[in-house]
Amino acid sequence: MATPTILAVFGPTGAGKTALAIALAQRLRSTGDRPVAVSADALQVYAGLETLTGVATPAERARLEHRLVSFVPVDARFSVAEHARLAHAEIDGLLHEGRTPIVVGGTGLYLRAALAELDLRPAAPDEIRAAWMDALARDGAPALHAELRRRAPWAAAGVDPNDAHRVVRLLELSDLGELEPPDGTQRPNQLWTEHTRHPTRLIGVTMDREALYARIEARVDAMVAAGAIEEVRAANAAGASETARKALGFDDLLAGDIDAMKRRTRNYAKRQLTWMRKLPGVEMVDLTRTTPEDAAAGLLGGRDPGAARP
Image 1 (cartoon, rainbow, N blue to C red):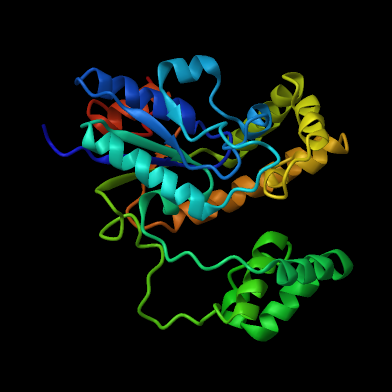
Image 2: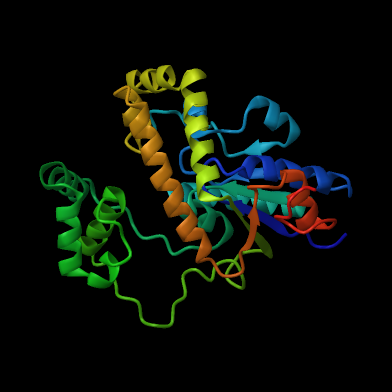
């Protein structure tokens, strides 16, 4: 049997990553493979937030086994370093069995951590984290971004001033002496070629902006109808951890602000698309006017990916 190749499916929320992964798995099974999806999502790990985070439904998981979802208690913290260790173990085990891992995710850092050996920088001590979180609450993210720009303009240039999580993390690294300027030789996005742990095909799922935003609107409405607000309230009552509360829409739904969640999700999808299009070697698949089945056929043989169904 030929050495299995990892398939990595990335794309913005609502674009159809799970549907494409299932379609790819169906075609692989027709050749005798036994594929398994390995999640690379920062928030789908939490048990009790399945509706909010868009975990594959039981029906979808019956069609394709998904690992690394819904296994972390909602009151526990979880890190990318922990995810990297678990994802590497899952992927290595599947390859050893001669099976194809389909790594599926919308969190860029977690996708990279699953596929590559990352030099993960240390977590900040509690006192440094607390000081910057206090500054964030007092002054706001743009003010902290200005401080980051003063300290490390090359780092601030690539960060949205309103992205509080990244701004705080970079300032923490600055305090720890871990924020070093690029030396001109590193190419951090070159993770999908020689820098991956195993041969990997990176598939980027995209969709026309108007169609994607319409799907996001419908997706949020469906989440609310399926009990996402009650889910968030239960997680909050259970003492949801700081990392669990980063789930997109958590605070918005706690406040009953569905429109804010839709707006935040559209903005996040835009950032995901921007990041994805910069990846070298990514095979773009447009699902605006084609089915996941036809796209899978194009990727694995049979049709051009992204071609519209006649």
